[in-house]
Image (tube, rainbow, N blue to C red; front, side):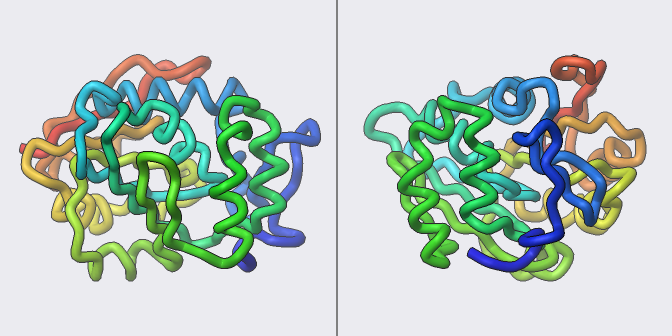
Length: 222
């Protein structure tokens, strides 16, 4: 997979943490990104308790694929999930592999994903998960998407640095593409994001964040 942040688009903090030069923001938490994924996106959506055959998770911001791999680790036996991620600036497989070295548990199951990604695939097959990464600006691609998610991982770069991915219009599209009773979770507790999601039709709750982050946000489609 080529394009996006390849080449001069990345800096490497401490040699292991990829930082987007475009957004001046790391791809995952400096305070254990895998633990943050589990706290924010899995626990924040009451996963894996809700997982069942055909359950559909959607995501804004694919990044290194860490959230997908964390999800794959908790799929119950005999269950197959659907996962759709929207990504404007895809990372090449070599950079993803380098980033995942920071998380041995994720890296241990990443080879099939990395091989497919390196070959240019955006429809990915992992044990228990059928995934599709939709490349392009989510402001264009999400409105055209025909699916509806049971749970959302809202994982774009910081709203202060990537405001386009947190606009009221895009949060309304998230709601429109959420099944009744579906949920979202995000690491950010920015007031304008919470208000946009409330206005879009979610019952929004501020929750304890991960690590140094005091708060995060979850919600359920009314």
